[in-house]
Image (cartoon, rainbow, N blue to C red; front, side, top):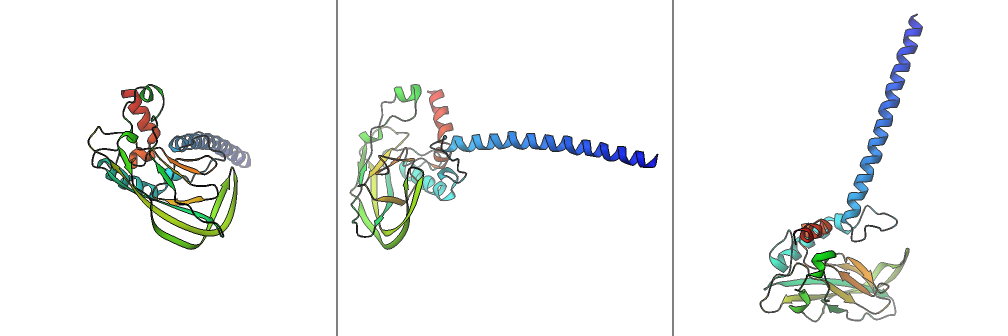
Length: 236
């Protein structure tokens, strides 16, 4: 009888272990799905494949840069913006293979409607109407650098040299506060962006154009851009 009792006790504990293991597995799957969905909502490209857990919005260096840029643009390090008196300093570093020359980048504040939906439809104030961009100034030059050139999903490591340019964006005259300051930096084919004050939102024209949706975002406006946009559009 004692052996039977021990056997039944072991069976009960085995059942308990199976139940708790199943519950733990279900909880892990559900929580993991939520975490991945939340992280995807922070990305500039939520549908990026393959999914990467290390992206611009979770990097402390970008938090610090977004904080400083928001302060320079609107004295609002949390939510950023572009307001009268703004003077934003920005740097970009490009590399190219040995034997090729680096051309000075072309900086532009494009006329872009922020977000989507009704808020974008009723936007009447654009940063491009008030922004003045200085000529890029060469501030550093690297003789030997190793960089990664991306072509679609293919990444190729190359050797070459780099140059760093600095430019300033100023709010010209008086006017309204503008929520976003879009910026594009264009270079000839073959030049690769290897560093910048703030990581770009995306690369366009097969890597020739680096685009920032907002060059003065503030730390919250940068990390939680989608949530801030949805809230702003809903209130508007």
